[in-house]
Length: 585
Image (cartoon, rainbow, N blue to C red; front, side):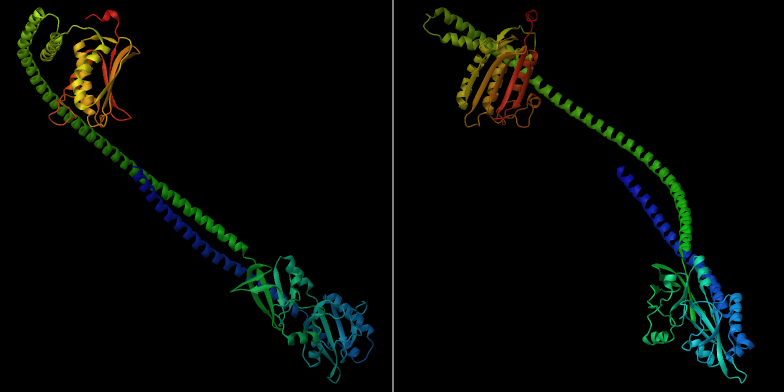
């Protein structure tokens, strides 16, 4: 189930990741398209603003272009150029300049010396100054209208100069009349509107700019010839004409003031000047991000709805799969239970068959025991009679009859046990001293010890250790365990059997230890089964422990067995100590 859940989780994650990638790709595409669209809008707006500024500059240049032509034909100007007094003309030019908003109006003779000027009252008056070096003066004398932008050599203020020749009665040049127009209001309007505008002349020198720091900077390095010409015309005195920190980019883009912006240009006739307009596209980027966010939100919402619907479908499918898996698991459990029941039945049948087989063998053994008891009973009785007669006739010099009598008693006890095994009846019980029973058993297995070359160490309790029971049957248990220990130790280099007795915690006990091969992987329950033996074929029937276990159980005792750490095994038999009133049968 965990594997299925992991697989289903992975399968659910893949479509989600695909949808996420598609959403990101769509958002990126939307951003690119919207960015291009909004930037084109910003460019269109910038083109409109540039066109407006271009018109205003051209209008400013042309607004007074006719005035010098008119003044050059004015009678007072012609008379003054011909040598008349300049007082009246100074007043008249002062009035014209004030009403027209011009920086200055002045009249020069053919040598370039100013004869009269509207600023004759000011400390920096043009009167008496020589302007023959100015290109506009030279152009006017040559018959054309002179135009020139420069910084004033007298006032130090920049301006745009327009000049026309004044001709005498004979038509020859008598002087030159010129006006100076200041563009400071135009620059102030650009700066006040927060625009980024500059106008550069044909040499790339910035004449006007919304940022005063850009003025008189060059857009590209000047050649030596350009610098020489500018110096000769005293066009920008005191200015080093350093390069402007800007960089034109691809398309309508440029970097200025450390920022990449929209960059558009327009020409200003008639000088070939260029008007540069810079506009930020931050609004386009912001609007692009807004549109992308909206589209991304819509796509994310659609994705969430899709995932919710898909999760519901997957959840339903998983629920069906879980139900089917639960049904399959229940079927498997039922099948496993049926298999286990069948195996249990087979084990019971096998155990019943084994028990039936053992019962059959035990029944045959019982019949054999009955036959042996019957056949040995009469010979033993006859031996008893002969021993009694020998007792009467002997003169007490030999103890052999006593020993043979003891053996006859034991043979009678054995036949009684066989009779009990064949037809078990209740047997009288008496106090049995485990110490005496252990010595008697040791005497019985003495030939076995000698044959096996094994030693026997008795560690008996100093005080009597008594238990209510059958002495003969308890000795049989001890004899069986001692013989088993001797057989188990026969392969040892120095076979040693240890027998102990004792009493503790309301019970009496004895144990028998050997240094033989131990129990191996067999358990006491396995060894207690009838006809189960660890000896080779022909050396035992496998009944010793089974009979011993039955005798111990009949006496209410317990038998345990375990392997020793030093090698070999230890068998322990314990009997409970019963109160005196319970000791009577």
